[in-house]
Length: 348
Image (cartoon, rainbow, N blue to C red; front, top):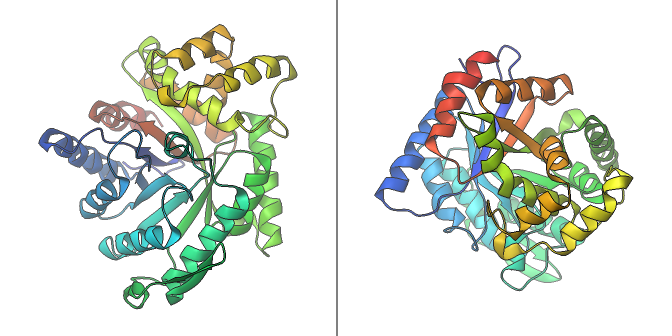
């Protein structure tokens, strides 16, 4: 029994590994085995030198230990790696995986801020993506006015590799529709945010002579799957608080924020501490709770609960038109995928 068949949602997962010792590699191997077993079709590692080891190493292990799922890095950014470097990574993964590599490009969050840098602007992201594509296809490109040349393009497994854009705000959603092979929408899972996001992606797609049907559209969600609902809610607090900050840090315009929550959101984002990003019991979680934003963030960004509640939430999202959910699982554990396989999937 697999995802994406019989009306079940397609699922993807992005997570991190906290070390690369024998036990961690064994855990990673077991998780990849379950992911392939149940038909999870996108498997990726986040790219943040702040929180975990190098994403390229882990993505290589993923490519070697899977056979069907697309594998790659989700998300990366245009700030901490040169496009020629990332193009080489993407082409290498594509060769290793025999055409299964993918990359999700975002503006940059903790990877940028905790290196004393600023996230990449939309124009930079567009230039970066174009540069990577040209390098993979021809070996020649330009980036920010600088010539880029590589010699490995002649050995690329494919002349194209799948590049998604992770988009939250209205202008990024439009950009994603215009330049992405696919879009990972992070605007939220509420009915009003879903409708608005699709309209903006569609507008961007039209600018490049395409329709929504030409794009591989996914929705990112913050998951927490535990034996009890209370435990799942507690475990998710760090991730949920980070989702609220990430999607609102550049302002609320065009983001379907209830007016009565705007003052609390503004204070929360202004005081967000990136050095405590996704900490389950840090100051960011405390401020989220004190601001009365917890329930709103869970409903807008989360898939949280015990197995029955988790399955019910996925069915609810399907009723809203979401049939491709890409989980940003953070430090995912083996028992999460075991619960997904043994108790959530049979209920769908």
